[in-house]
Length: 165
Image (tube, rainbow, N blue to C red):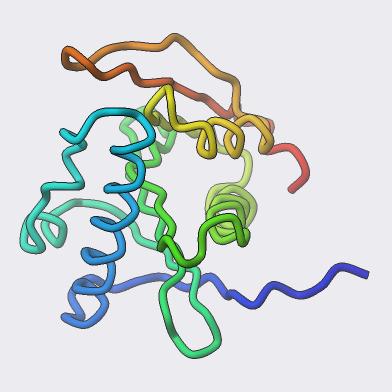
């Protein structure tokens, strides 16, 4: 019998000051780690102000511990073609490799967006993210370089749904 996750997935309301501040702080910490992994410190979310974060037209989910601590965050936007683009998925460094990212992604794909096409990009050298998306059935598309010194990997999950969900 599987062990229950110590985390639960809940919508996040960035209109709440404490929630927005926590998401901002955790995102900056997580993106600082990614910047070291991919050798590029120009990740837009790493330098985003709290006000700019709150202005984003995104839907937000959090993986929360029993004490309310936010372990991870996933944000997405609806595309005009009916698909969905994951804008950001990050995990608080103390929660790395404990299933928060996988939990958020599985929840999004099975509970919020079942059967819908989903796209996401990540740094091509971000091995943990590459592994997660591949493991959940995303297909890697072409890499691209939006700016010199940065190579991004693109992924798509077809409308048929994720693996293992």
